[in-house]
Image (cartoon, rainbow over all chains, first blue to last red; front, side, top):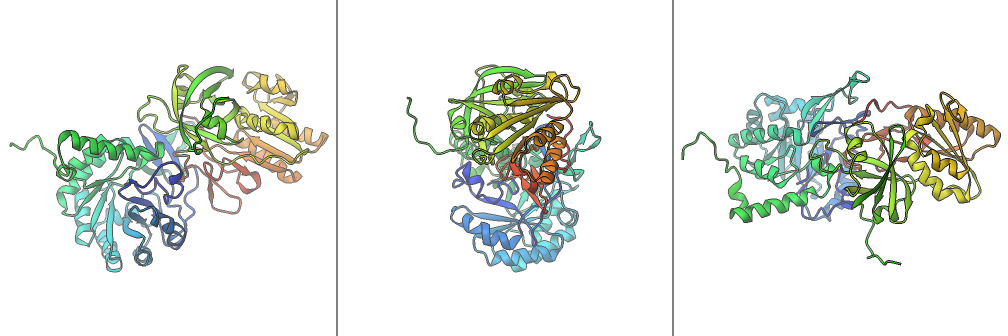
Length: 290
Length: 273
């Protein structure tokens, strides 16, 4: 899959890479109303990482359904619409609209965006709030419902369990880590929003750990993501318990990277004489005798 | 002539570093061999260069305006400001770079016979040189280039060779003592311009844009921004529009009608990577 925020709505990326071999495309965070996003600078490069604070710039769910989903429909790839909001009613509005748009195969609830003032990450760090928003969307959306978890919590497994109990069909692990960089020349934060979401290879070990903790705690599938840029990276997540994986930041650098990941996973399975589904969660812990 | 397979302008290719020349203080001219880029790039467009053998740090590509095209080769002007640009300027001859491009919008060609100024500062002269090369023969072109001091003047040899360039330096070491905006005002007073193409430091372009707006001169500005993908995906490189909202420098830009953009916006430039 391509992770939300790194592939827009697919249409413009199709100029750079054949998207038809994707397992799914997770399109840009979409909200009830159009959002202009945050003032620049919105990004800063950090060691093996990217700090961003885009601020959910998007044309609003109605425009996405009208202008973006028809193109995505002809791609022949499952479409997962990432949905964000400030209030439970915002999420429910988007879910109701998407329920009537069959091209949207699934919703990924973005309860973990660090870059908007209200909502977003608040829902992802509080168990009660996460249950409320997940359950509310569940009642109006019948197709696949994914909850995207934030790593910015003490115990991510508890949040994953809350999402499962409230009706989620799957969870994504993880969204960005809250980070900050300072421009020592100006003594200002490197990005306008002061803090932003850190992504890229720098966060991969955190993401693998979160995937492992979540996969042990829930019965629903886990979509692993966070710093994947090679097949070996993806295999780490799969062995740790992810049933599927998504590439995000790496595809901003190389739009064709997902093809290498897909082919590399296939080559690994062939070389190791193992089926991919048997690799999922096949982690061999050091302290288990056996 | 060698025939080539008919291929779409697929903007992802490999180019080879074939020449390097120190152009001015902190500025390097690199010549890259890559016919796809050379053939398809229009003035104002850029390429996004992946850093060779750097693994994941630095992570991102580096966007560079195409400064000229000669046959199958094209030139870029690189300012050594940090880790990434140093990797590019110090790469050995024969090094290959994975590039995305040509990317972005183009300078619209001038009206035939109109009087046009190409107003640049520092590394910003790169896209102006390419525009001048393509447009100069069918308009009354003047190149106005400014720098803080003589050793910093970019593409000086080339521009002086055109016989259509005028220089300014803040310290008066060569050309007009003052800014390139002072030069533009003086030249416009002498004989009015109908259109200005500009690229340079933000404060320079803000001044040029404001002057053109006051004088009713059409002005097209090529902007620089921190970019992650340069493919329109991440929305990281936006600049504010005059009428509200943001546009992507990589996709709607880098060339904009200066009137449409808030050139006074603080994009937070301090030091590069």
